[in-house]
Image: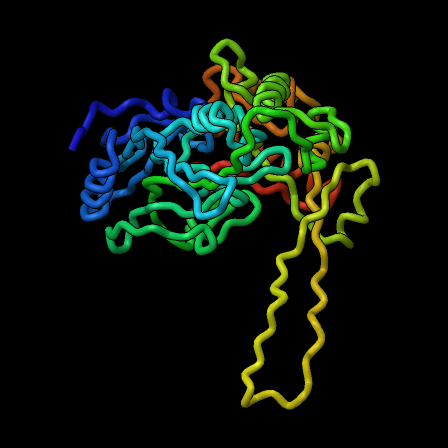
Length: 378
């Protein structure tokens, strides 16, 4: 098992916080990853599986446990049972954007709007990453994972992962444990074989972001190039020379609220309807059927509202910082908390709490953090 000299986590996370762990293991193959995790779990010490470190805020004190670095990589193309589609099985430690670049180069569509998102493939289903109307849930077939409770390796269909808006059964939400404690070993996606010819863009959110008219056709490579440029303008593409990118991307989730609550917000607040999760199939056992079919339940629609708009209109402009703090909102994007130079996790958490309080006071809702918080409180 390749145990290595521990590296301070501030050097391995995009928010640049966190002390050195007591122990560190580098796993470069799936077998090494499984062996390392089983060994750590058997010992019962605190542990952290670390991929790209782009969705973590880690406390300032040394991590009193073992960090297992997921350094596996590789893409396997496989046939799909659906005509016009192909499947990609990708190792968990593979760079996400490198996967998107590969898919686009192969003329495969379904993840191109998620170009430029930092991190690894194994973390993508945990967060159900998404951008501009695309989410990994739309193309995810299954994951291979190892469960902490049993140490067993299994293949789990996407439908059993509890995938929702920036969440899954595997995610450590702030203040609660995941429904299933496990580490992903590989991910299988199913993507449409479209080549690199122009094709109409269906999603309104993506068309709006890229300035496209309804029905306008562009290649997947064009979408990738323009999404990356759009993200770069917002400081959402990692750049060692740009402190605006020393972040975890969007620190707060866009809020999902009821339609009635959304009507209490200013009309200018950007919002998008959320399709309700309906189950249209009603099964009544024949022996119990008495001729009456109950009416369908009334499901209230929900609305996603822009957290960035709420932050800015609570009076916190891009670049905002508290006095004497080295943490600040990005100068390019009000939704990103950034480390402006040796900021501590405590400084970033203080800024996050201040933002939550201002938005709650102004609009009556509490923004929820998107990154996983380790040894730090809001």
